[in-house]
Amino acid sequence: MYDADFIIIGSGHNGLTTALMLAREGYKVLVLERSKLPGGAAKTSEVTIKGFRHDLFATNIGLFLGSPIYKEMGKQLHEKGLEVVIADKPFASAFPDGDVARVYMDKQKTLNEFARQSLKDAESWKQLLAYFEQVSPYLMSLSQKEMPSWPLVREVYKLYRNVGRDGVLDLVKMLLSTSRQFTESWFESEKIKSLFIPWGFHLDYAPDVAGGAMFPFLEVPLDYKNGMALAKGGISNMINAMVSLLESMGGKVELGRQVEQILLENGRAVGVILGDGQKVYAQHAVIANIHPSQLIEKLVPVEALPSIYVQKVRKFQNGPGTMMIHMALDGPLEWNASEDLSQFCYVHICPYTSDVAQTYTDALNQRLPASPMLVIGQQSAVDSSRAPKGKHTLWVQVRALPYRPKSDALDLIHPDTWENIKECYAERVIDKISHYAPDIKQKILSACTMSPADLVKENPNLVGGDSVGGSHQLQQNYLFRPIPGRSKYDTPIEGLYLVGASTWPGAGLNATSGYLLAKRLLRKNFKRKKQLESVH
Image (tube, rainbow, N blue to C red; front, top):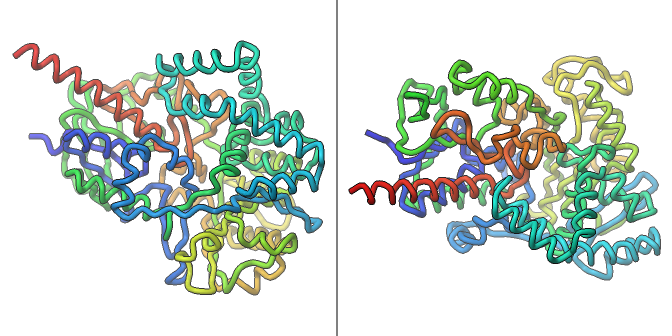
């Protein structure tokens, strides 16, 4: 007797996407989640003061709004409570001299920002936008195709027909370029370059790491065109809408249900064993929305897997750690750079390319950076429902940090466990912000610091405090993600699949791996159904 057609381990947005696709076709779907809240790394919680709603990790839902699942089920998700707010002042970079570089949705304002730094860069910006308009539809489509696959080949051919051989070669060159090489080929102002450089670092691409050019090339124009999107009231409202829609289709989400082991029979995944010993069976497949290391180290006996697979998964590289600092503020920050900077959804404090490069070197050498890159999220400036009237939230993402620090670049913090040093390091971060927004210390009503070790406690899939599901560098991206030969979400065990940030196309709320796997499973089960009908 089967308990479900499909069992999904983990309620991250990719797992929920797979569940929605399968449930819509009439399959019985069961999602099992260890946490008391669904969403994986997409959760909202009042971790400071009641009434202040903080997105604990992920916050920007722009990729989700461009995903196939949203195109197909967006109307239903809105009916289940999803509301979207758009920041028309998406992001900016602040500098220690009191200057700022800003990207608005407003065409002229953004052009003026580029021109204020460099007239040449203003012209380059217009040229970059024209190039983006030419090639981005194909690049975005490619990122939503199985890797490799015939649909992907057909999309590449469309690109070739549109831009020609030289155009394709130029794109491949960009794909292989570092973010520093990309910015230096387009712009002369260090401040304009600093609008692009941080975006590569979001995916573990330091300025001099090959392959880092693509995400900045896409993200900056996309935010300029579309603004930065948030789920009103917190990202959990997006997840809750997905859960509600799934349940209306007959699917089921059980929280606080720890999966201890995947049940195998004759080399096939047939179900799971829960923490209380209960066995739950799946007729068709088990889908794990987890980090691949969790599969081989916890859920499946190593001897049940080919040794080469185990070796490759154990070599899977995580990016450096991340610290999150959530603050409840008595009011908006007063930035030195400009009055309107408090209205921007994101403010990057790097400040320059060389600073980001140094931070990365420090983190890789297990040294606490003297001045880490900061991503300052001011969600309540865009969405007033996140804080009481007149108050504000602050979301600070600190990139990048060592998971096990062995030294400090300033020789001020003695290496110790994160539990013992996280507040000291948080003070360093707040001190850095205070150089740009001097009133921050007076505005803080309460703060919650989450070290890289805390990220792991909250979500074991954030291995080493890496918030993006593993490095996205070239040797572990595209058809090599998560490992060569397993880019289509399958594993060596029949009936067992992987989705999530560790699989193609990687991190971000793109919902792509969950969608692509669901399409594949539906094709597979349709063929099986046809075969059975022909037999009878």
